[in-house]
Length: 110
Length: 114
Image (cartoon, rainbow over all chains, first blue to last red; front, side, top):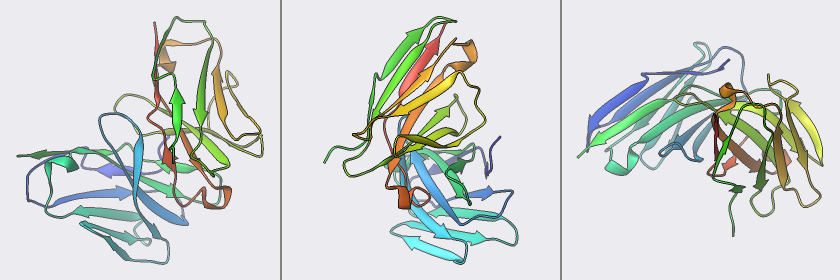
């Protein structure tokens, strides 16, 4: 079973618009990470936010974390065609694994 | 600096056969984790190897086994293949102390079971 669940499952936006996706999880975490996957190949780490942080920025990415609601959001600003990909949240708890959600597929239209 | 490499990239097997997938971690990394990703789903944790030992295992049957070698490379073996084993198998590496911080993934092995 998946620890995290992303919402929406799919998102289609125009180039230059912002994309927002959400992740909800079930158990307490040490940190939450976001990964990108292009065309069903390897995942690339985007950003990590720790359980004691509320917001983090990296370039055009903004991540928020609300541990009281067990949820996180990823905002991609000024989207580009190259941002077309699947995005996954992954939670890290007190074990040796990352638990991934089912992902949000983002399509950026030119 | 080579990243995580996996071989083969694609594989076709029939039900009941056995398969071995290989992974070389990113240079300097000592920990390897394996994930199974079914079509349209997120990666599911299979197991993690560090110091040539399995440190943690996900909810996968004993048909799934692994090994880590002294050079930190790793193999994933699946016996008695089922149609449901068709998936993308991803290897991820890290330093052990960073395994919950950031994983580096290979491009995966696409396994098709007919």
